[in-house]
Length: 117
Image (cartoon, rainbow, N blue to C red; front, side, top):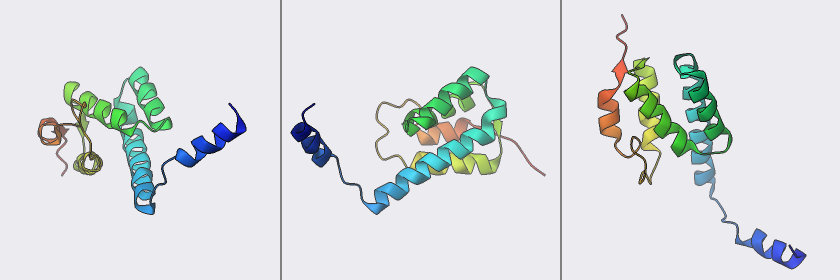
C-alpha cells in the first residue's frame, strides 16, 4: 500500500463521539462482566467462543449467543443477572439478524430466574 493511500484510508475512518465511545465501553465491559459471572454455568467450548467474541468486539454475537445458551439450556440466573442482560440487550439499536437479541421480550420471558430468599 502506497503512503498516500494509507493516509487516505486513515482519513476515511469514522470519527466517534464521546457518547459512542462510552456506549462501546459499556457494551464491552457489561457483556464481558456478565459472561464471567455466568462462566461456571457454560460449557468450556461455549465459554471459549463467547470470550473470543468479547475479545474481538463482537458484542452482538456474544449477547445473542449468551441469550441462546440461557434459554435453550434453561440455565438458572439471578434477578440481578437478568437485569444486567436486559440492560445489555437494550443497548443494541440494530438487532436485525439476531435470533435472540432481536426479540428481547421473548428472551426475558423464557429465562429461568432463580428465586432467592
